Image 1 (cartoon, rainbow, N blue to C red):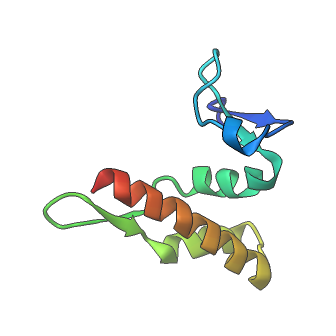
Image 2 (cartoon, helix red, strand yellow; image 1 turned 180 degrees about the horizontal axis):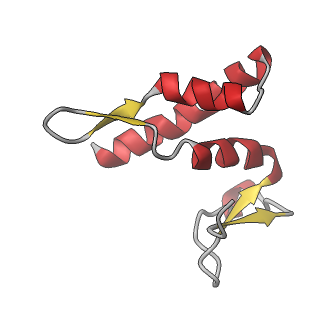
Amino acid sequence: MDTAFAWADEPGEPGQRTAAPRADGAFEVWADNWDTVSLFWSVRRCWRLRPMGGVMGFDWAQVRSKMELKRFDAERMEREAARLELMENAIMEVLG
């Protein structure tokens, strides 16, 4: 894992949660999100690109292959795919 992420022991109150980087530039990751963020980091280059440029979304065949290499069972694959899809949707909103 890259040093861009750091473990967050306490997520804080819902109104106080923030995605702002820490002073050292790292982002905190709550314990219940750590596995998904770790998976996202391992598939961060698995994007489908449009022929004329731009991102279409994840290449889910590559994402599935990564999960199989990590020996995820079917239940974990389904759970992590749903969580990655939320991240993908948020990223696609930013990228337009």
